[in-house]
Image 1 (cartoon, rainbow, N blue to C red):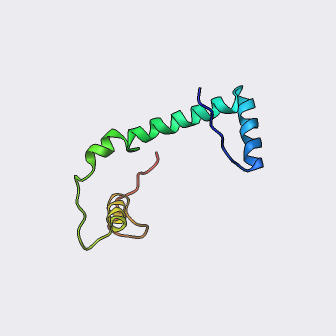
Image 2 (spheres, rainbow, N blue to C red):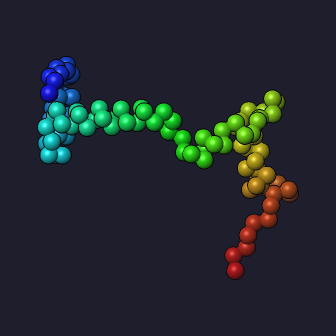
Image 3 (cartoon, rainbow, N blue to C red):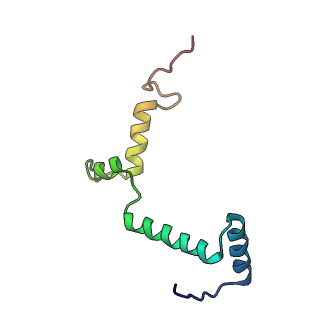
Length: 94
């Protein structure tokens, strides 16, 4: 096993010892788990879901509008604005 020396603030060292103790681990074992978890996430590359990755690039925005403006327009079209005569009717409770 290789030896690694780290330099951290005293408070961080105490936090590491406390966290490791709570988990029933040594600080070395906890550090090993942390590094392995970080390495496995890095290898995935993209944190987007499969459907989102597949849908990327399917739509293009008009040059005259930002993505926020397009989203606002879609939400207004779907849900309407209070007091807007073109707003869709609200569902009535029976």
